[in-house]
Length: 169
Image (cartoon, rainbow, N blue to C red; front, side, top):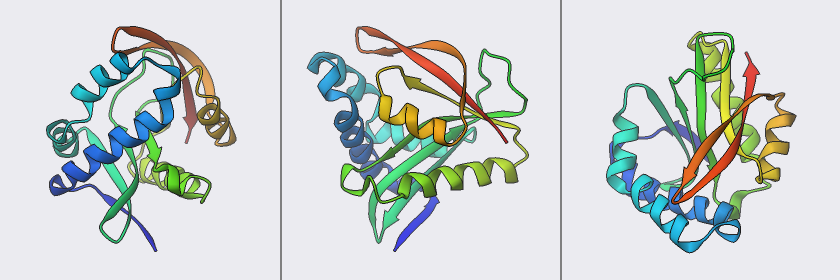
């Protein structure tokens, strides 16, 4: 049975490993080893994950089977540089271990994030998604996310174009 729950500080080491694994699984084939290593070394350390878990502006939610973390998402109180209904939350990450992709866990996690945002009075969820991540773009379009702009995501030495999508709650 899969449980969705708020991440705890003691989840940081396991979350760090999941973050790195899912990020590499998603992007390694399309990026250089140096750029991937540079990004992962700063963003996905246990200390960085603990900081995100403890940040009062973020909600880190993990999907678990028993004690094993198999997916996660992060909602952050960040307003986009684009016009959306406020207050808005950023869906800054939504990743699932490759072994559990296709199990509808992504659907469950998206449903959970939208319900959580609504329950807290938010009007919009927005996100950035790499223009080359066609699978993610198709997933977000099924959830009625619409393009509202573009932004740069710095992966190591490579500035990449993200599409900014928003979903009205």
